[in-house]
Length: 314
Ligand code: BYC
Image (cartoon, rainbow, N blue to C red):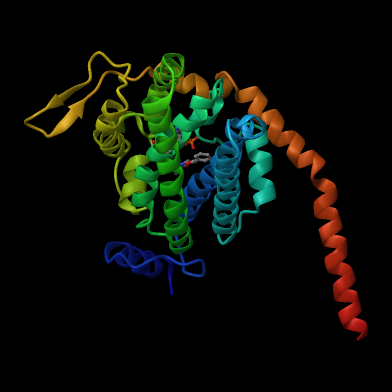
């Protein structure tokens, strides 16, 4: 088939919601956009382990430790599914990781903030995984088959993560001390705005959205998803007896949505450009994991070669 015919065939598939699969023809830019988004998504899952793993040895009970350990393992699994999805497009996970460490690929802004108290761990589960689900439920219908299918399992697990985070906060708010409730409020104050930033810049400042929506890589705009998250979450904050750190937040009866204040976009761009509170630490953690893990990869390769050699002789 000629290029023009292939393009027409590709566009028809997108139009009819038929998934694009690894062996199908696709425009180079479509492939590039997918590698960028899936790669960043994979990096986020892996980098996102660090702020939570920081509390594994300090969880307040065996039950909380077991839950957190399961969550961290799930996140590592999500990273692996996503790197596999990127590999179906010809991008190796090692190359993508190198690009992130060199500052040439991003990961979610949210993981550049520190986890200072146990309630931060609960708030991450509730707010960060809660925001991630809103985005990822939509991505279950993304146009690239391996990415869409990966999202189905990831969403089920994120849903458990969100519930465990919220349940942990309900427990503190209902049965904790005043000092513990203050820690919950402090944690909401620090995580609320960064959670809203996870959805990316406003639609009129989002250079990639228009094309990604046309190709159905994205199914909703950044602002539509952010609005959905706010609408979902306000009542949950109220149930905890806590407040949202936004004096402009109010329900609009006519639209049926909550209106909210202006996000600090200077802070957002600083963080995604490498100057957030923990960017250096996170990149250093990834660099050291990569460098200290070389022997594992080499040992696995040597073992595979040995097995292959034995098979040849037998
Ligand atoms: N952080 O044109 P735009 C999790 C970048 S992990 C950093 O709107 P796009 C979890 C954007 O990449 C879940 N960068 O871009 C794990 C672009 O820069 P480049 C993570 C951001 O791609 C462990 C530029 O800004 N979820 O749940 O159309 C423990 C312009 O933006 C951010 C995903 O990764 C940001 N927040 O839309 C706990 C979801 N926002 O690449 C929990 C998958 C924007 O041109 N990704 N940028 O240099 C997406 O849905 C989309 O990529 C985004 C951005 C909505 C994030």
